[in-house]
Length: 326
Ligand code: ADP
Image (cartoon, rainbow, N blue to C red; front, top):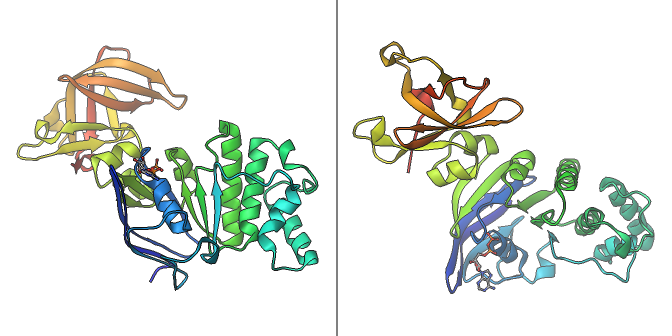
């Protein structure tokens, strides 16, 4: 049995059903991504005990916590709208989670945690004087102070600006690596999930659509939905290219190469050639150009190191890069 084992978890709202099974290993950093309304927060709330499941079981570190009270689950939480106690200073906020420890030990751990989250010397500060990023760091320290079996983070950085998000997400990952805490981190930001996770759960309509490492999901998406949720790409009706094939073929922009001359398909047995593609858009990306093309009325997205000089180009792509997806 995995460290966190969720079996046949069910939650029914009027227009929404969560139905999911999930295993998380000890020390794993799992990111949960998916469109708004796919059930990410509901899943986390049920694990935390903020919501009661309608069915299924949750086992954490060998304990069945399905019906345990919140404080008995051993779960730490960092949620976007979980406020700090405004009447207490930074240290007291962090110490709050360590009531059973003696005072000297609490002070020692608090100092360590402040250092860990990059807020050394902030202990006496009023929490009202903190920036959004600093307040999230204090929340993080407070959640870790209680030595949770698992730490749940629900969009903890969504109220912060981009540089701050990057800064704190790196701190979260560093804390994970130094303490080895199992973490589940919900975000709607694919790049954030790609940059910090060990593995990713992609949710759709209350169910698990895909699960794997970022590389896995990007390279081998199990569905068109996963393919587009994890990056850009082109989907074409499969029968356009392969007779008798159903569904779509999908490829990533960087898997295509463009040629400004006509290509003779008979010379490229390993490739599929799309001739006569009209260049619709050409966006400079720093590392190259992202081309929006039209092939027989179908949109194609291709990356190119150079800016095409012609309005019409050919696109070649290795047959092995074409994934047949539904
Ligand atoms: P996400 O976190 O992926 O955006 P949520 O888990 O917040 O999705 O919500 C999933 C669905 O469940 C949404 O359609 C939402 O309206 C619905 N939902 C969430 N909480 C409740 C509730 N307490 N009562 C009724 N519907 C809810």
